[in-house]
Length: 523
Image 1 (cartoon, rainbow, N blue to C red):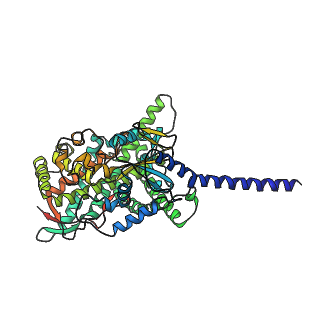
Image 2: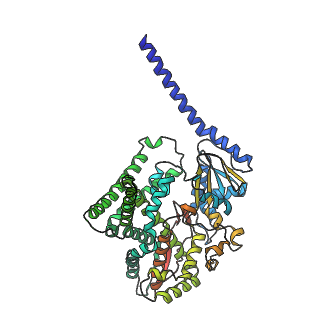
C-alpha cells in the first residue's frame, strides 16, 4: 500500500513538473510575446505580427545573406547592403517600428532625445542577457551591471588615462614600424605596390593590443587572437538562431567547441597573469601595460578598502582579470582596425583630404616619430577620423532591455518590461534632418569646431556609445589611430586600386567584405 502511495506521488510530481515546464515554455514562446506586441501596437508602434520562436530572424538573415552576394558602387549610403531588413521595415512601417529578435520585440529608436535617456538611465535599460554562449565572446565590463560594473569600471579606468597611454606609445610605434617596413620591402623599384591593406591592419591592431596589454608577452597574444577569430565565427552563427533556455547544457558539437576555445583562451591568459603575479610578489614593479596597471589598481583599491575596515579579498578576482583582458583583446582590436581601414579607403577616394592630413602631420612632426603631445595638435586628422566614424561606425546599433517594469521615455514612449530597444547608430549618423542633405558625403569640415557644434547639441554622434557606459577604450582607439595614420602618411601615399570592391558588411563590426585593395606609393 505504501509502495503504491509513493509511486503515485512520484508520478504526480513528475506530471506536475512537466506541466510547469510546458507552461513556462508556452509563456516564453507565445503568450508573453503576444502580450508585448499588443502593448506596442496600442502606442501606435508598428511591425510584423509575431511568428513563433524566430520572429523576424529568418527574414533578417536571409536578406542580409542575399545582399552580401553583390558589391555596390562606391557610396557612403550602404544601408541596403548591411541592414536590408531594417531598411525595408522602416520603409513599410515608419521610423517608429519594432522588429522581432526571436520572441523579443525590439523597438527601433532614432530620436536623439530618446537615445540620451536610454544611455543615461543605465539601471533601467540594461545590457540584454543573450545566449550564454554568445557572452563567452563578450565577458567583463561590457556585460556587467550594477555595483560590480561600477567597481570594474573604477579599477580599469586608470589604464586609459592619457598619462598611461603615453607609456604605451613605444608599443604603438613599434607595431606600425614593423608593418610599414614590410610594405617598403614589398615594393618594386618604382616605389609602389598594390596591397590589400585590410589583413595587415588587423594584424597591426592585434599586435598593438598584445604589446599594450601584455608588454613583452605579445607573441603569446597572437595565439589568443587566432582563437578569438575562431570563436567569433562560431558566435556569428549563433546570432541566426533562437536560444532556448538551458540549451547551453546540451553537449552539441558546437557547444563543446565553443567551450573548448574559451577554456584555451583562459588558459593562455591565466599563464601570462600567473607569471606577472609571481614577478610582482617577488618585488618587481608593475609594468606599464594594461595587465600591470590593472593588477596594480586592483591591489591598491583592495588595500584602501581593507584600511577602512572592509576585509574583502581582492576586489577583482583572477577570473575577472582574465575576462577583462579578453574583452580588451577583442574590443580594442576590432574597433581600431575598422576605423583605420575605412579611413584609408576614404582618404584614397578623397585625395584632397589625404594631402591636408599629410601637410598637418609634417608640420607637427616632420619626419620624427609621433608623440602624444603632438597628436593633440592634429586638428585636421581628428576631423577626418570623426567623419569616418560618422559614416562608418564600427558598430551599427546599441541595444538595451527592460527587465523590471514598464518604463516611460521622454513622456511619450512606454517600453514594456521584457522588450528591447535598439539605438540605431547608422540611421542617426545618416539622418539628413540632423546632418543636412549632404549627409552621405565625406565632409570632415563638419567637425571643424568640435562635436558639440557639429551636432548642434543633439546626441546625434555616438560611435562609442555614450552616457556612463561609453566605451572605456575610446581614447586608446583614437590615439592609436592617430599615431598609425601619422606614421603611414609620413612614408606613403595611397589611392584606390582598380580592383577595389566596395562592399561594407557586418560580422560583429563593420568590415570591407572583399578587403581594401589600394595602390601604396613610397614618398
